[in-house]
Structure formats: structure tokens, C-alpha cells
Image (cartoon, rainbow, N blue to C red):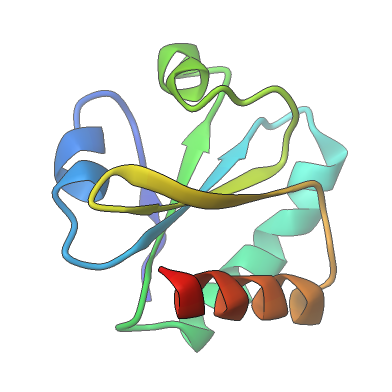
Length: 109
């Protein structure tokens, strides 16, 4: 599945109006844990194809959107349903750990 690059112009249509739950990777280019998360996020997007939308938001380019979700540390993965946050995962973790957390969150969502 394609990972959507979010910005203020497409955020409403891609996140708030999405029929699928959305997981947003809040990241920045200078953040080494964020760079480590990128390939894990890409792999996960393939595992959840059709079940969840994967999107990335550069906190340096759109700080107002990061602020809206009270992002205080990156990487931060925020899971939303109909634009409302249902949970988040902060910090880098191995694929299996993040997959387990996503499965748990989806089971509750």
C-alpha cells in the first residue's frame, strides 16, 4: 500500500474523512529514530493493506498539525478513526512490537 504524505491541504480528506483507521507517523528528517522507523512503517503498511491507511507527517513542515495532536516526542505513531485519536505509540520499536500494539489497538477500535 502507498504511504500518504500528509500536509495541511490533504489532512482533512486523508485522515478526518477516511473510511479506514489511519496510522500517522509524525517524524522529522533530522530524527535518527524516525529514520529507523521509516522501513518498519513501510513494511507494516504492506501487512495492513486494506485494513488501515498509513500516512506520514513531517513535523517540521506542518508544526500546526503536530501541535493539534500534542506531539511532544518523535517518532510518534497516532492511530485515528474518523479523525479522532484512539491511541498512540511513541518512540522506535521493532516491527513485531509495533505490529502487536497495532493489533491490540485495532481490536479495541
